Length: 245
Image (tube, rainbow, N blue to C red; front, side):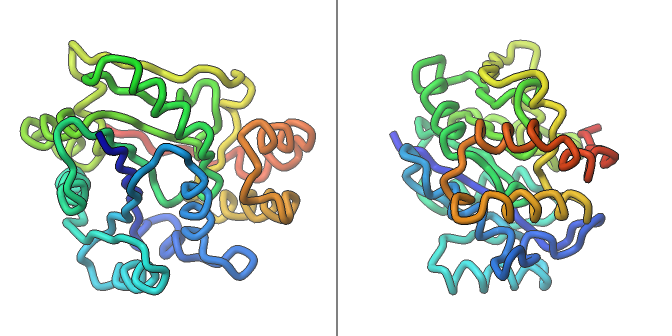
């Protein structure tokens, strides 16, 4: 059984175009994400899933330069792109799939591993995720089997289900949803994903304050930084998260 991590990334963000390759301290934002994912002890394969659109050639070129695995697929049918990305690295039905997004530069490898372990000790059909009621958005991790992903690919038909990879999985009447709730409710108020310029400003500030420790800083360290410096969280407090509908 392999653990395959797939990060969705594209340049065509409507609110902050080109955000995933926007430099932070002379390093593309996506690179922070990739280097922190690489600290996971349980991931066997990490692949970047981008689109076949011309402007995403930049992501493909970046991956080639960094010798990273990259798959290019449909821009609108994200579920299909995600499914085909898994197949491109030889995913088998019993394999574990991790879904991440490239706009989370401070993704935490210890939370990725915690979610993987929780999934490995549970029902293979379950949908395991980091609960955003107890962790900041930007620490998002979703875990499920390749078999579950295959079922979603075959049976999800609405536009929302095709656009949001896991929507079909966690909205089924018999869905087995297992949240990771080991954080704090106060942490759930923080926002560490990047959708707008003020999100980027916050992440820049955090990375600057972490200094040389940016790579190994765990979720507790990052959340303590935000708790101890409440003015930081105010930078992007007004940004509204778009939801699947």
